[in-house]
Length: 183
Image (cartoon, rainbow, N blue to C red; front, side, top):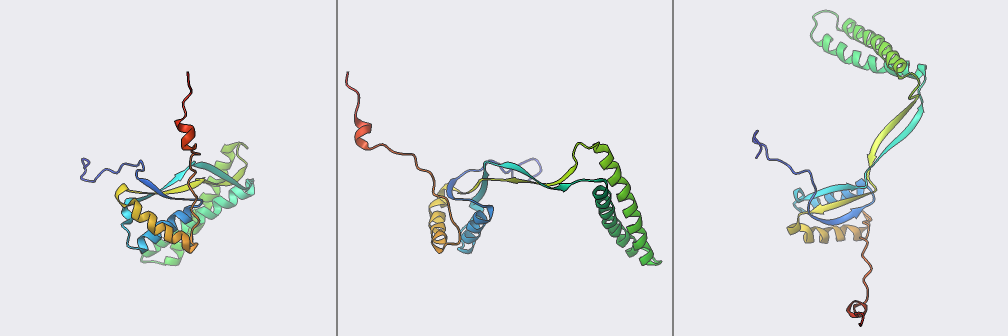
């Protein structure tokens, strides 16, 4: 127990690998299937392997796009503030709403322009960033691993997921292992 009364959670994964999948969706489906089969899923973990940060470029960033994005995000925030003000006012709630949207759009436009001007042309593009894994392992505590593998074998036979076959080391024939060089 920690000092605050909460149990500490070790973030390092442990257990036996009961399945390896190409996509997170397949790994998630495997754990969902275990849950459907009344398996104690609290003993499983999904681990992403070989993590990579991928940045997908979505377009050029220009003054027009920077100002438009600032205006739009400011207007949305202003709408939120205007709704809150409208709820707690005795007067015209529509006026509070419109004031919030107009002021939010104005300040969003200003801050969008300021942030674009501060970049000084060093990053003139927009993008989306994601962390992706090449494979996903489903791990299970040792005492439940055999039961979990049996369930996942049934799921694989149904064709709902396509688990990767673990790479086996090439074993030499027993005769070669037993032969020793003579002096």
